[in-house]
Amino acid sequence: MLKKFRMPQAFTILVILIMVMAVLTWIIPAGQYDKIMTDSGEEPISGTYHHTERTGQGIGDVLLAPFKGLYDAIDIAAFILMVGAFLGVMNKTGALEAGVYNILKLMNGKEKWMIPILMILFALGGTTFGMAEETIAFYTLLMPIFIMAGYDAITAVSVIMIGAGIGVLGSTVNPFATGIASGFAGVSMGDGIIVRLIILISGLAISIYYVMRYAECVKKNPELSYVAELHNEHVAMFSNHDGEKPELTGKRKIALTVFALTFIIMIYAVIPFEDMGITFLPSLGWWFPQLSALFLLMAIITGLIYGLGEKDIIDGVIEGAAEMLGVAFIIGISRGITVIMNDGTITDTILNYGEMLLSSAGSATFILIDYLIFIPLSFLIPSTSGLATLSMPVLAPLADFAGTSRALIITAFQCSCGLINLITPTSAVVMGGLAIANVPYEKWIKFIWKYLLIIFILCAVILMVASKI
Image (cartoon, rainbow, N blue to C red):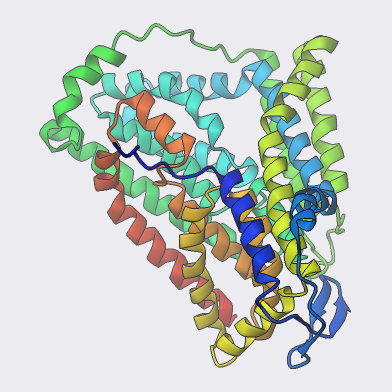
């Protein structure tokens, strides 16, 4: 009897891609462009591609590639670990959960306003620090409240998953999407932030309307719920919830203030004000080393303010960083694919194929094609950090040939990943959240497919308009 097929993990897929790329170095002709040094690093000069001697990659090269890749991207990997350290200390304080619960108490008797307020909060988490796995903790807190308020389980799931998801899709300074992609594209994290803000705000407005419309419909006519047949089961599961109610103490308020201040500093530090023609604000020009130091410092300050002891602060730093080790390894392995391509001198050959294919395409057509390309890639590699590391070294230079900004390629990448990561069955965030809420996967797809189509069109239109500006 055949075993049920399971999609391989991202690590396995990336290792296979390294091996496939090594084989291709013996098949694809070797070649290079002449390069010019710019503020973004070395950029290929259109029309200068020429063949070179083949340098096929062997078994030893395959084994070394992930380590060379991690070495090349150590600044980004260290930054991700420090973000994890900061979140680890924040988790020790319980401030995030307490903040959300306090808002719920203030909404007593005005339940419908929970939806926009909570979705805005989750979206802020998504756009700033890539809030995803962190949302899992909120299902047990919010499910009873929504069920007792007369809504269904899908409403609660939507508030959390779509709220954080649209934030990630419209990431402004999310280190796991915008940060990594910007690093490998050779542009500042602040480049393109206006377009991403437009996508975030318009997408969030649509998301809130979509969820509120469904929620009000279900409250008036419970039989119209996609999980109507599970209503009694959900009431039994969640109505008698007596979980611990986190209190928003003075120390937790200060911790939340430091949390917000950290991301405000980060946003300011990476925006190139001078390049935007803003002369009255000095550009700090911070990048991964400075940002890493910022998050580590704020982790320590948060712990001290909250009154954590030395051991608890260090434990929080280590535990938080440990949770991000998988992301750091993904970066190394993904970068290993680029190492194989570069050492095998086929990267520029692939760029040349792309240049010939897209040479007649306008900027709007080019960005739309990129947007569509990222959708199947996001299914194949659900890790945003892994996909950014893999794709940006190849696709970002193509933007130069098409007369499109590299920052817009990053925005297209985020839009595609954000859409797919709301439904991909390989995501622990999606499947874990649905499992806690007892919502069947097929019911979730029936609910969300129209929303995905609307957001897909919204992003496509904004990307094409932005490419013309």
